[in-house]
Each structure stands twice: as C-alpha cells, then as structure tokens.
Image (cartoon, rainbow, N blue to C red):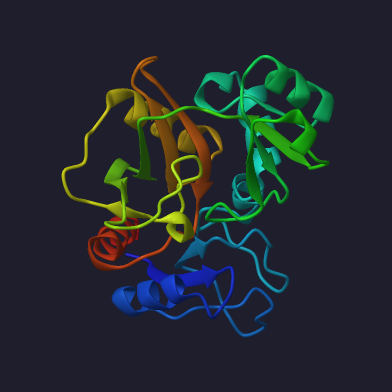
Length: 250
C-alpha cells in the first residue's frame, strides 16, 4: 500500500484540509524541494499546475487532465472532439450564433468566466439585446432535476441531488448554493442516463475521479454534464465516501 499525500489547488482549501485529516496524510505544495514522491500516491485536489521540483506517475488525477476539466471551454471542446457532444450542452464562442439561438426562442447562458464555480459569472438571457461579449455561451438546457455524480476509478461511488432550500427565494434557472439550492443525499431519484453520462465523461477526460454536475430533462430523457469538479465541497457522508474511495486506490 502506497502512502497517500494530498496536492491541493490551494493550501487553505477547507475540503483539502478535511480530507487530509480523514486520510491522516499531509498536504504538499508544488514548489516543494524536500518532498520525495517515490512510493507515494499523489491525490491531486483540483490543482492544474504541475509541480516544479518533482515528478511522479503515481497520480490520482494528473494536472493536465484537471487543466481541461477546470476550464469550461476546454472541457466542452475536448468532449465534443471525441464525439461526446450529446453529453454536454450546446455551446459556442460566437455571439452571433448565440443571438440566433435567442431568435429561435432558446434562452442562453452567458458565461463571463471559464473557471467560475457556483454559478459565478453566469447570466440567464432571453432577450438578445441583453447579450454581451463573453468567452462562452451555452444554450439553456431545461431540466426537471440536477445531480452531482461522483465517479472514481472503480465507478460511481456517491450520488447527490439538488434540492431547494426550504423557504428560500430560489432561482430555478441557475441552481447554485448562493441562489437557494443545496445538494442532498436523501431520496435521490437515480436515473440511468444521468449515471451513464457521468461515467462516460469522467472516463473520457481522462480523470481518475470527479464530481459531475448533471442536468436531466425528463421529457427528452436526456442528461448533460455541465462541468466536472475535481475539488468539490466535502462534509458528512461525502467526505466519508471520498476517504473510502482514495484508500481503496492506495
């Protein structure tokens, strides 16, 4: 069994600290000159920057793969080039194409940042006069439910479903924590298309593990992955599941 160490995207990450505590391991910086990676399993927690002073083949999530997953445009282009357009929303970088979608009655999500989390930099637009310059536009995907599906080297190991916070003024267009939504592990409605789409996307990136944010349209029986988180929030059961998944790989 290899000794596990954590390589976080930032040392102050709450989820990285919690995971390191559960794994009883230490966190290491990429510029460390004293760290010796031999015979150690490096669990990469959302870091897309390769280390400068050392190298190893013993990764759980290589930085190059995280670089793709953490940038929405690279992520969509990568999957589209591999014939997986059906697993992601329709997207474009061309404002004229986005306006054509609006002319056709399709709302647009204008994404002003490619690496934002929790709906950061995302605008829901129905009027083309409100559309502005942005690095990415996606055609709005109407959904009845939204999930977070956690996929590891041995398959899916945890599933959550987004629920509206009770008595909150929730935004039903962009469902994020700051807009009145939380992930729940209770009474999750498991959907085969959601699970299969998540497995396919994580395997294709390729990532060893990732938490897929998935939208599901029941009328069309279609699921799309909007992003894959490689350093998701961890607490309670989710923290336990990640600890178990990583130990099983060491």
